[in-house]
Image 1: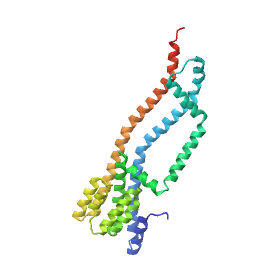
Image 2: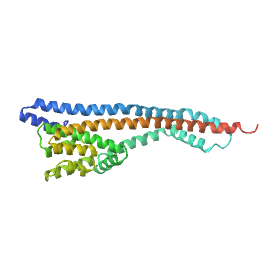
Image 3: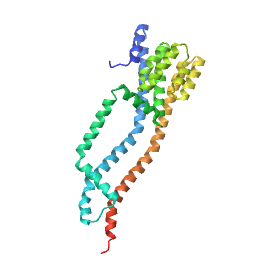
Image 4: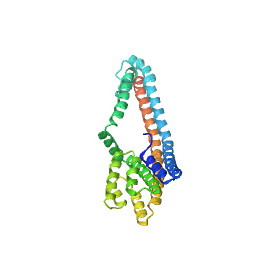
Length: 279
């Protein structure tokens, strides 16, 4: 139960044909490519993730430890506080006195999310959202294309018929919507259709992938073209993530600056108001 259907089939074919070493080499090469891709993606996302974590810790520290020290000062003023200051103090009061409730809500949200992902309806809804959200949808499609094509190429190289290869390669994809569309592709191939047209009709893969697969199918070199599609999708995926991260970095810095400026302004507003009172 620890091994995927693709691994089991490849090893079974290797055992039967006496080429187990080649089958293991193909599986190793496949997972090396997939691991290299995921490692590069994670490396690009580390910096934005650290910015979010550090920013969240700093803002939480300000609300919990710094702002409560100004409460007594504001109370001594005896003046009506500006609305931004009142909102700031209210948030600080909630975070300082009801932190346990916030932690419970966070834990409940995480547990609810994990439980929700165990139902087919929720999984399908989540997968549909990831495919339709701008930017994220294109990334998911490129990732699915890379994994599907590389798995297909490995299976075809092992001598597996294209219908069976499509059926097995779908297990390398984690999106249930894409898997359902691939099952439709498999059924159309059984009916005598090629692979390029059903893939286009599935509407879950990039157009460039469809065109390259169509060329490979017409030239009789589908396996090599699938490898080229996987490599191209890997490169396009990395480039898109790099562009998104490059765009998000200044946005996150600007957002943090706005939050800090808002906190400082809300604290200083009543102090400035007090300094303008007649002596």
